[in-house]
Image: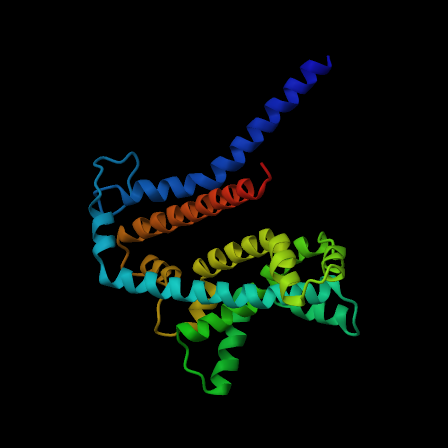
Length: 268
């Protein structure tokens, strides 16, 4: 009876997992099919397959500019947010000080704001300061929302970190820089790595904040939205599919590098 019940439970779990994966990836599959269709508008089943729209997308100067802007924003956001989040996570996860709880609440507060409302508020603030919206102000807007997210990711690793290892290294004569370089960073590196990956992907695909604060400097999400509203072209699903495949490639690359580094660190 137990084996039969276990098999039934396993069957329902597999069905549920298949349903969830289908619901998530079916729209992406439809987008990929639309990008490979020769017709201008998506018709299923696809009558004629073609890579014409992929070629036009790869050859488009406008698309190159969009991707360049998005990459510049995402890279800057990643570097700055990981740096700020690393020390911020250490501040409230490891040390006790006056105002710590208030700092933690204020730091995480932007996560709970709708991004459209946050983007509008940032735009009004920038106009008050006389800042012209551009990709640089978009970096600032992304940081307001992404730094708290990355801080949470890194803080998870900091909470499980054994600080007595640093005390032991100090007792053995290690300097603060040696402790930071050889103990703190290596042990917290998985959290830093994960936070950086989150920051890059969240910034790359962010639409609401970029819509309000990027100004005339368009990004990939802004361009996709504008083309869906008016002037649709099959380059839209083509670029969307390329963006999705790029994100998957980054995840696989990061996962492979992480496994390789873990194997190299293991004693033989």
